[in-house]
Image 1 (cartoon, rainbow, N blue to C red):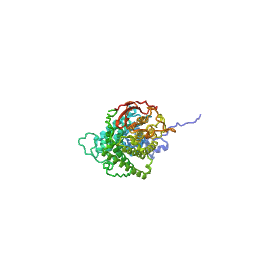
Image 2 (cartoon, rainbow, N blue to C red):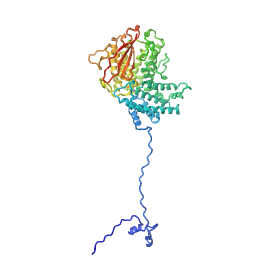
Image 3 (cartoon, helix red, strand yellow):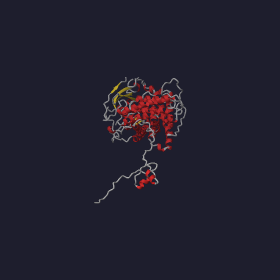
Length: 570
């Protein structure tokens, strides 16, 4: 019985010579040629080379360049400084120092990098609070601990760099000093900010002085060479303005930075001629004039008020004010000299703006106009005690109010009149802006409508340097109550005013009711200040009386303590 025969299948060999594979016979795989082909006399085609394994190798990557930051936290805070802090800090003057010089130095100088990270960390914490927390309250939450750590690293890195080469790091030292000032102001440590500022001014003043071989201070710069372009163009102006802001806030302090750019200020017979090629030149010239005004004010202080710097910051030696008919000639000459410069600065600045019309509507331009008005009015009345002399400046008060209103509208979008919504989330600029102008306007102008409008804007301003609106506005509100005979804690009137609302005019407030000078001392750990003010209730022949008052800062609920008055004069 026949059946189908099946051949057992075998896996085809993948080896063997080419001849045996073609003949489908088993190859003995002898080398160099197989034995089966040699015996049969056939040409052995040899063996096929085994296919090589294909291995894919990833291309060699280049080592990534390090950005210098130790971790993502540092990197995040640097980006925060670059995108937010740098623009807020230069709110009024669009300087390259924040958006260019500081950022470039942070990538190459460890001390500047750590200082920038510290400032950004503190700035972020500052903006996280809905309302300003003034400087005498504890302000070190967990978020600020990181800022302190970076601050310590910055100080250490700066010391190492100074020990290696003191003569080549002047811009680094001053940049770090500026950042340290910002850090202390954001952290609420005004004395610390003043200490850093004084150290930087000491360095700037020592540049052109003779070397001191006995100096042991590590920050002492031994080169004593002229200022570099970067320092003179970018750092010197901002330190000039910080120096002035410190002198405005610390009674008895005169500007410490030596001025080299004010032409012929000491030559009382000179006729100054200003011509500005850049906006920064106009800024520096005006602030040099303000520095001169502050110096004059301090020299005439004791003659006008007869006060000594313990009682809430003073020891009051209450004496009669100066007889205005016996003003020293040198003081009169100094005042006239500064007024001469101010009158020359105004047309020169107007000519510059006419050549650069894009500057005419900028906040920096408006701020310079406001400062020019304030400085001029203060110089005019710098030698006299009578507050009623300020009434002659009413046209300038009106102009100043208009300029401040224009700046205010550009600086904040908040127009609410309720205390809980009086301003947008806090912003902060390194330098002073309109707060000092609004403070002067509210204090010196006795026109009820003007001073209330100024106070309304002041209560809604962002913080500027060490000037905190929460702390600056309440004493001025109390001042209006005292001068206009309004009961303590009563409303002084809403703004904008209601239809038919009547305000007192300058002539309605007699000299004996006017407050001539005031200063405040914050109560430690509380949102309160002790406020002291000078009056002459018995006229100029009766001498000074110092009144003591307690005022609350602007609180969330918008209420004020009922202040008490206690006369401490004779």
